[in-house]
Image 1 (cartoon, rainbow, N blue to C red):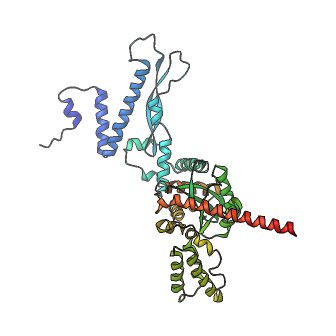
Image 2 (image 1 turned 30 degrees about the horizontal axis):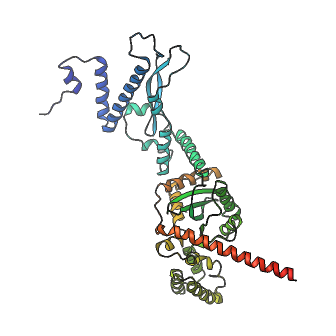
Image 3 (image 1 turned 135 degrees about the horizontal axis):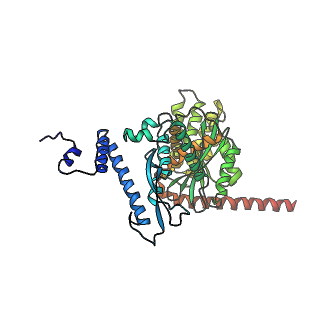
Length: 435
């Protein structure tokens, strides 16, 4: 049977309810007409008011009862604000003061719901999802006209201030992340251009296969000075320079020079085969590209380093006739992981810069709506926010079980290289003494 009698009237037909209860029911019915979410929000705010009153009762005792031992007293109500989703909502909050009236007694419940960190998190999440400051208010949930009319912190300027502060905090967190206890097997370096500026970013891969955003540095171009500053900062934050690590780069000379400056000539460097292949093919005519591409891939897929190097050397000699230097520059460093005995999925992972480029693609998606970059600090904030956002989606690299063996192979390689250098130096010293 369908009933058209309002709920409040149906209840009062059997007994008269207090006026306060009738008002509350009227508000609830009004919220219900605006949707389930608006009704839920109204119920939640009513529950919050009840929790605040209960906390005051616990502090000062029941209202109207004399207690000479009480340590706090009621002090009326005042306007307050709590965080509701991506907005600040006005509420009437009770107050309490010490019995001597000298200081305010904080209400734990109110402080929790008034915390602005929750608001900052929502603003950050929506901005990173592509919501502009102008459209932020339109992205809010329908929580009822009464609440919307009194909401705050949803204007363009307020959202912008919140986002700037939140990304500034994230940048500080990223640039101050301690690295002393981190055992890295691989460090990848790459640059990202931001309308006339360049950020050099670093991605680490631990011996357990976990990826971690290490840091970034801002400059006008991808030059050795900027890259060296980033690497030096990693060392200052505790990165152990003595541990064996493989560096993976796209082939840029500036990045290679920076690695040499900070970590020396001994550390192994793997150049991305995909970038190298693209550079080689760009030198060739369309008809020559398929055959050369097949020979490059065949050499890089070989598990024997000597055979792979021989095949690349033969190809380089052939290309030198018509295209001098097309392949020879950095050729041996495209076979570093092969020389270290790495095979299978891990070899495919470390032969390219795909892991760090995946992180950079997330950064690009996040700041796709930014049209005007006002400063280097702004570039750093947005890039750091994108790197940390990408970090939440990181998975272990393919073939990660071989990373421990990679670290051991690198340490043995470094030892052999240093012993070779020591032996050569000793022979040169002996020859000089003989002369």
